[in-house]
Image (cartoon, rainbow, N blue to C red):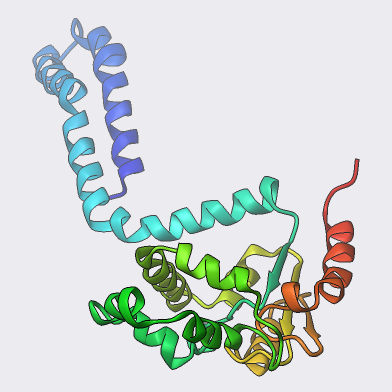
Length: 245
């Protein structure tokens, strides 16, 4: 029996107890009706108990598992109806396995060792060499990126990567975009050394009506390496997608 059925039964019982049975007490078989009304009064007064117990059991046994799905459904509907008109992605890995960080970056996630290396052993030259993987070969790495790396805390470095990986492991990005049902523009650099260009082209092409484009000569950061070429796709997409007026 569902909770809605139980709630409806208690409501109907309360109506019988307070509206119908009092009119039948003076008629034949009044003792039967007196017993019935006594029982129904108790049920009307305390009928909420099984409902509360049912709600608690449902929350513990069912809702705890269903909550992420319901929250995800609500978020998709909210985005679709009011907050977003489309989704533009720049070098976003479609799955957790599509991207591969260099060894120097991966070792930074090892507990204790990674933090020790970061604080005591890593030099600006090594940071620059690791950051080079985020760009096409021979692209000059700006000193500002090295400064930004040192300004980033170790906790934010490890937890942001963990959150990204967990997000993609729970559900691939292409499946999330398909469920949203919004226009999609996926941009990637054809010289990307971190996320596989072939994986991005293949996975994002499965999203209905998605526009998947490669920026020639760009690595993992086409918005930095090729800003005008990237904008040449982003601006028309925004103009066609965003509401006017």
